[in-house]
Image (cartoon, rainbow, N blue to C red; front, side, top):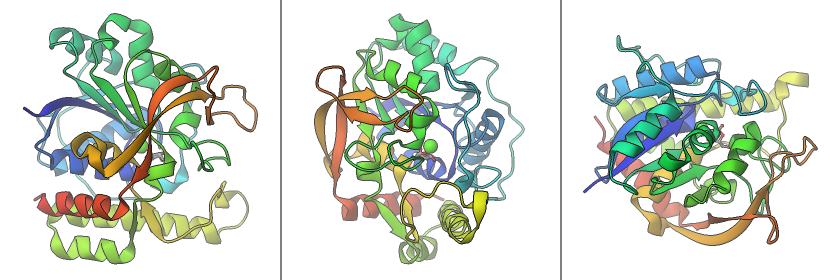
Amino acid sequence: MPTPVIIDTDPGLDDALALFIACASPELDIIAVTTVAGNIGLWRTTTNALKLLHHLGRDEIPVIAGSAQALRRGAIEAAPIHGEDGLGGADLPLPERRPLATEASEWMARELLRRPSHSVRILALGPLTNVAQLVESRPDAARRLAGIIAMGGAVREAGNVTQFAEFNIAADPEAASIVFGSGIAVTLVPLDVTRKVLADREWNTTLSAKGGKVAQTAQALIEAYLRNFEARVSAKGKNRGALVQPFTPKFPMHDPCVVLRAIEPGLFGAEALALRVVIDRSERDGATVIDSEAGELVEVLTRVDSGRALAAILAKLVALP
Ligand code: BDR
Ligand code: CA
């Protein structure tokens, strides 16, 4: 029996790839795609989710918009790396259908109460705002989750928006803290592993040579990321943005690692760590630190078989139409 999953996402170039891989995985029953502000504003992430599912021929999967801003902080500052439309300018048609006329955390709650307890998992690919809203507004429903696999954090290495913090956690640290402390089984997929699953241009050429229409789109999304990053590296002044790490022309498979963990958990090694989210508006704001006294126990992925992970992603993408 496939696992029912809700994909909570802010597409986003790597979110798009994660959606593609999920749709190529019979192990998963995608019961909804919920959207959150993150890489770009909510209207865009929702529009992008509709476009991506249409491109995949999966218009039957409901799309529900969630939060337009972080839980306690207002607007989330988008990362320029995903392009002005969040999809690197990919020319994908918008279907006629609209998102469901409800709100993501309310929809999640209704669905969790309707289905057998501990049958549904959330795959969280963006800031954890919607999931934290569910935990705060409907703890009875949230407790029925089988678990959450979330891309976020940098545990034993540098962040990507600052030296200390990773984007999804930094965008809404209060939400992350609420989710970690919720008592729900959380698996965190941090930069410590996602930065090791890197697609270079050679990999990308193989993808486009072997695959169909969706693989061509995936190839274009990866190339858009590489070009945006190259433009930033050569830009001057504020267009350069906060470049925390040295640039190499490789695409990190952040969000796809969440889907891989759901379908092929053995690709990763995990540790149970007591994690605390720094919420103090200092330069360390949004960091995920190991703190055996004040931290919450989270399963953290700390090792990955990069070669097998990349091969699995390639196989899924080329299997799509
Ligand atoms: C995360 O931030 C976003 O830019 C990506 O989509 C990914 O979810 C990586 O830090
Ligand atoms: Ca994302």
